[in-house]
Image (tube, rainbow, N blue to C red):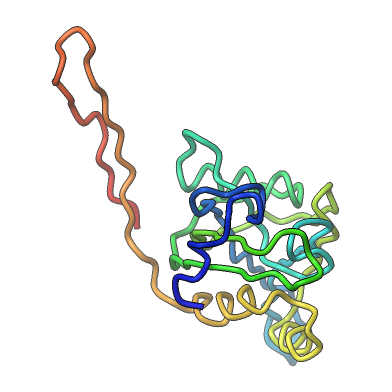
Length: 195
């Protein structure tokens, strides 16, 4: 694919994109109790998308990053909006540059996303279906089956496989302030390394 998307006119891009859309998705896992003879079962929360270029596919929970939000805030907001669950931000696991060529039956030809893959620890409770689609918990074996049957977004499957066990990546939250009373003066009000 290379840089071939650059030549696609904006009217043929998903939502007329001019730049990649920043997206935050979350690896959310829980351990279900087993009986005395078996280990606790590890499960991951997925959502079956109702719309967008990945309609009807299972996917990691998440969505677009709104202007002004911090990374942890957007991850927790999206989880609450899409599943009803509260949680706590654990870590950034990876960064993915995803470029999509859509099939010829679509009016839209391409999409481009910059995906921040995070781990979030969800509080106990049942995830609930919201506007974005059905939600359910899957074991690693069940996720493998979804992938074999072509029912999970291939890149989400790859991100889950790659990043679920990875060490966290550091990232920095920075806030800057320019002072209009003193032109040319800029100061940093926040520089926090997150791990």
